[in-house]
Image 1 (tube, rainbow, N blue to C red):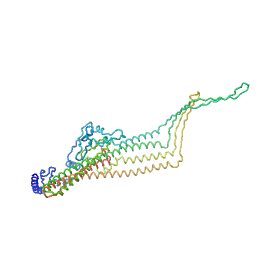
Image 2: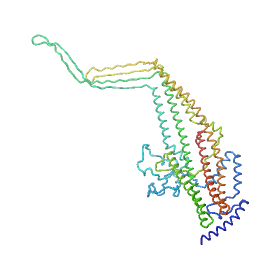
Image 3: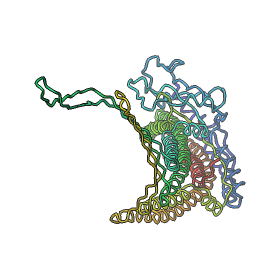
Image 4: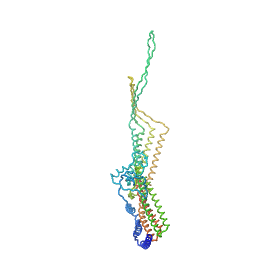
Length: 571
């Protein structure tokens, strides 16, 4: 009985669609959404000429106007999400965990059908103070030994700025650069020590066997004399001490060149810290955007799966009442299976992206990271030519090559100094005493000038100096190569930025048109003038358009960060 009523209703709907659909296409009116499935909302066909007009005007706008227009279009195209600022706070326990993150049963699975809830965090004592709770263990040699110690029990939402700040605090590679800077500062102090005299004190306390012998003529009772020898031994204790003072008066320029090379090495390592910091910012932003794209892909895949499942239910109902075919049902079932597989793959990509970002930030092993919703980051105020000049002026890699040239020049002077004269001042004072005997104390002192000059050593010093000269030439070539690489990086990022900005507007229009095409395909099928294949194609095109929009937005943000890195324009 129910199937008969449904069949009568479906026949009336098909006749109604057959009359209303051609009329709506001709006049540009939209059919009320109540006449179709509740999961669709029709868009007026007048959007098509408006979208085309938007696309025609896009190239005539200034960069600021284009960015503002694109931002408005994106905010309308992407589903609204909460964009309230989130401060880093205590991690969010996963479902099934208590406040400390301990699982109740340990068997819960994270899957597309059982997503992880990510509630916002409460405001606390500021982002900088709350980020301290995300710092790793102070002992870098610590390693976990139990499975529960590496189990993910919490997810931490972070903004891009918070993620970068956390990377500056926790990343081991940046910490290594800072330690190398301290190491070069200690090497500088070592080189500067050559300007001061050296004082050395040494002493000796030793025991020794002291033998004393004596001989004499002793008269005998019969009036003669005899020779008599006496020998005595005793243990003596001797003490000696010496004070040495030395000062290099002239080193043929070796000392000054060594200090200068150490100073330049400190500058080089300081720039290396800045370079690694810039690279860390770029890598953190890229992995952050990778995670954003993965999360958005899950949202799109989930929506496509829901649409495919709805289409499968409708197709089965049509088959039951006799207006559909088994072939249509099989096509819908294949679409649902493919959509489920895409969703599983998207979830896997999100999990990998989360762990990759967590590794970059070096957060505690039981914590994972998630991001804020996707949105445009900002605009670039410089032209291409201004960006190239700014890169030449700001990039530390160019200055590093110049400093490396100076270091090699100083090292060359150090090598040649071995062939020059060396003049040292010296003085020493020495005392000694045998403590077990009286009158055995003695002291003496020396002072003077010591000079040395190596006249021939087989050409080794000249060969080492020649190596340093070649290092100078290599640094010059590296400077040129680095300059060309920097320009290419700026141009590549700039061209990618402008193309992605255009693609955002195009993709936004494509999403609107694809949604409208899907709604019309459903109406055409319900009216009997369309096919199931039209719906499947329209659903696939809508998914592709939404993916293209997300990729364009994330690609724009990524290219903006790359352009900031290429010009060292770090905010």
